[in-house]
Image 1: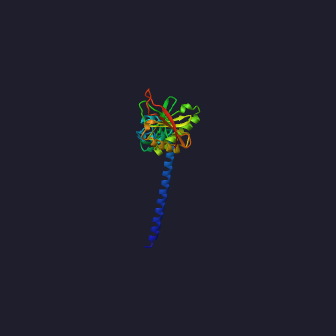
Image 2 (image 1 turned 90 degrees about the horizontal axis):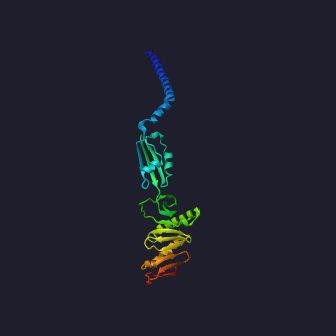
Image 3 (image 1 turned 135 degrees about the horizontal axis):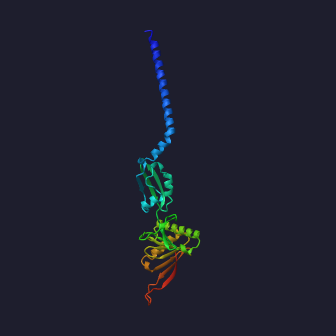
Length: 277
């Protein structure tokens, strides 16, 4: 009975010895792992990065309608067999958004072998006619690309830019035309706008159905369009007689109409009248 405390004391000493031994072994093992990592770590990392298991075998492309998959893959300079570890999503995204038709996008690595790219394309709102070609443009005036053979988009045409030699003035007038299109869309003026011509006297809008030239000048479009609506309503039963509506004068509209009386050659006379509007 009297020797029990000494036995318990010896047991504690053995336990502490084993604890110190385990800590020592752990430190030695940690040091060995660290040494191996320093020696073989870079080579191991290279081996993992270049292993065939991590080669991208699935490139998912979503959101592209106008631009083909092949064109976008070539645009971002994608190389088959690239390791998922070597993909730089931000660099790919920066190349992606430089495409004229791409407004934004995102690139995601899906380990171990998938890459997902989401594309937000720009929406064309008009065709810009000039220098012998038609170009798609978006609402900001950015040129997206040419009208391709066989394409028949239902878009209004902006014409007349060739009349202005200065590029800055031409660009300003294109933005004015786009502003007019936006107002027409919001107010649902006419039915649809077929063409906006940029002339020396300002913008001329031509509706899709009536084909009546509406001269609007350079500004105050919303008020002038409201005045034109009243004129078209007054001529609703005789729309074929309207030839032109000039709204450049304040509080007055100059209306050109075709005479109903036939002439010897089968053509009617044009008459010009002024009306309060």
